[in-house]
Image 1: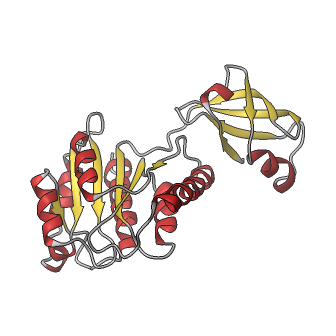
Image 2: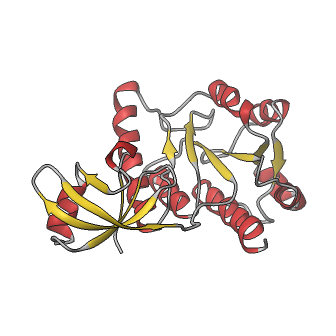
Image 3: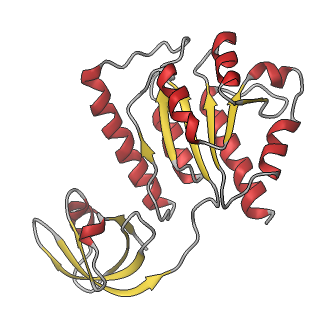
Length: 251
């Protein structure tokens, strides 16, 4: 069943109003009409099966048929801090990362980031990333949409990391040394009630030694993601899958 996200004020205890681009998707793409059903989420945990009662050019009106209790979110919050990569890799990272349960994405300008986002393009590109996230969250039946911030500086990233309890930095030099135990230990000891995770991943070329040292000084644990060297667009998918296996499937 098709899923749509709405703002909290668009969902009451009995009705839902859908607006914006989703109107066209419902009426033109899906060719739905009165009596058809969809699932709606207010992005704050409330999910309902709804029946369409009216479609106009400005809104779709629905009545709530049944409240749904579903557990589709990772049991622990995971934020992916991604060094800006080249081309459209970031679009793939946020799309697949959303499908795998990420809670937030923080792109950052690393020393080896070739791509530079100026202030004029940053907002537009971030809006596109958020749209990709919305579509991926609906497709994968997420109850919540991850947030993607505009790119931040490395200094700002370290400042933002202060509130996290589990801090991980992916470092290929550790993979070269066959260091594979730290990541598993961190996940095994994670408290899903009280912990939250941030994972820093460098761009193509990785993080510099200075960046890694500064992250360690800020409380990050340097980890290898298995014995193989992963591309920047693969690393976040690896760690999210590892979180799911350790904290969802084994518990």
